[in-house]
Amino acid sequence: MHGHDSEHHDLKHHDLSKHDVEHLLAHWIEHNQSHSDSFRERAAQIEKIFPGAARDIVQAAELMDQCTGMLKKAMQDI
Image 1: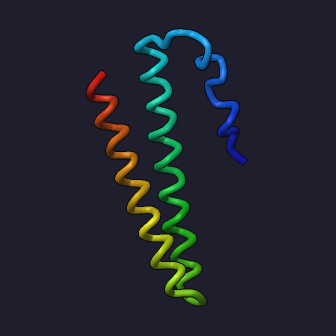
Image 2: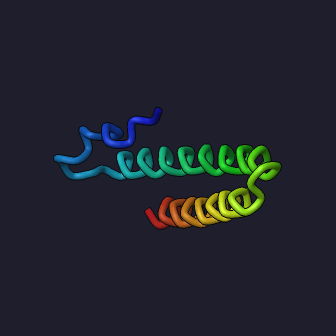
């Protein structure tokens, strides 16, 4: 399991440096890409028994890719 709530807990109570923001964005980008890859792998397995659900999971992966793209844009904007 991922430690979503505990990630970067120490950054919540002070001003963020550029390094902190870069680190956070890099973590989110990697995390999203990992989930997107996992969604696609599982969708391929699920398709055999639940094609509609598999299509939904692939769409979720595509939406995750869009989120990742926005995070990459944010990285360029700092």
